[in-house]
Length: 113
Length: 224
Image (cartoon, rainbow over all chains, first blue to last red; front, side, top):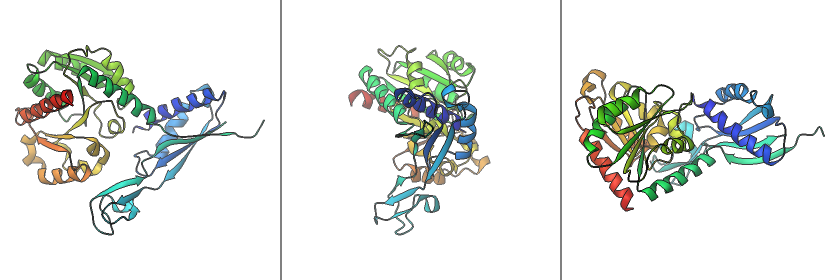
């Protein structure tokens, strides 16, 4: 539900980089989207199409999403495990002292011009 | 040239906002002003809770309120009429949350000099506002009983960014099978340090605890 807001952020950042590099048109934007970033890539695509086509510089520009699998680290036993499958409790030692190693990314990886 | 050139960026889209938020916090610190970001679902009783809390605090602190909504100014008027406190309505123009830049624009309309506390009532939503740092000193949220005690499991990010969880409408707890112990357990799974205060904004029960929490927070912020 917040994907449109996210798209506005992406557009702002992409335009800034394009201007800094004297680029007139951007043909592709590649995103790294973490599995637990709360972004739904399909919605992001829909919002992107709607918003990007309203920008001269981004008309027809394609948005690609690389999904980054979420991994959690356990401080109690030192293991890394799949976040989506096991959540906040370590499946190896059942410890609660865990934190997200990766999978929360919402970043612009690169743009194609 | 028909080849495609790739420009590497590798930057989080939240990076600029986080920087703006840190800057805003530093400025607020200079003024000795504490900014609270209050979040919740629509209809959880944010405005009613605020009015009760503000009436307990208005003689002790110099306060302003910023109401963020997609449209209308009913909340700002309601707060001003019920408490006499300076209240500003912000419109997000369709956006489901506030970011640090929008918060700053709102604060530009508040006389910060001598202001102890500014409360930002964020857009009613449990998803998006949790993603964006507004520049507030602390985040608080209201979970109302009819929403159910399992919300911390369903909206983990919201509960992990909040330092205070106010459980509102406890007067109707028996009708909704709301398990406060389970709710507390779930909140602490997301954020072990979160404080939980059960209240009933309608009758005022427990609201003094919220006021106390805020009073302590403001004092600590000034002395830090």
